[in-house]
Image (cartoon, rainbow, N blue to C red):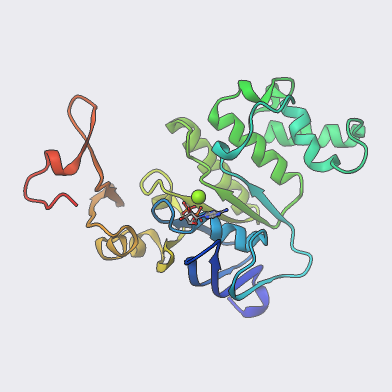
Length: 270
Ligand code: ADP
Ligand code: MG
């Protein structure tokens, strides 16, 4: 990609909230058709990296360049949202367009646009429902609708599949793939290596610093994963795809989750 095509470019970005850096020397370039997943353990700086791209955290070192006039949509992690806020799905989505002017009297055109976005996301019948009554996957799509109404060129999503079931995860992945094929750049974080990361065209792995980047085949390797998670991880080949075995837990025959150290043999159980 030539430099002139980038939507966002981070060079040597370091972020800190207090004492030490939580993101150190990160380089990242996002082009108009990119679909990139950021992987890494909890606390590795994934959300901070998204916030640096969005501009809601100011780096202590390095530079963030955004294409002038760039429209960015942000879908927060559903767990961080206050769901008791008394609004319906349609109102929650409309607010993203009308805040600061004449809520609650949106135009007919705005209502039609909201209805069309909700339909496209498969939640068209839920406009009158309270946001609290929705499943995790439906809540995720409400926030996606809010972000899409800004007509973004770049969509940022923080852990879009956390707290959703397998079917909703599949739907979200398909939807994002379609949006990307339609010309929207997508940057998301995920700690779901097999269900999400392995299906994306490009990954960046993070553990305060960038530990790897490339295709899933290049990033989901024992070497890069150990650098990223600080523990040895097994990678299996299944149906032409990489499958990462979670080092922290094993699913026992009874379905109970148990520490690997208690159940495995021949491993040091870290
Ligand atoms: P991730 O999304 O990978 O879990 P984060 O970017 O949220 O990581 O956090 C990186 C580190 O920064 C963590 O140690 C976290 O506790 C810390 N952190 C995140 N947000 C804040 C904040 N607002 N104030 C202080 N520390 C924070
Ligand atoms: Mg996070």
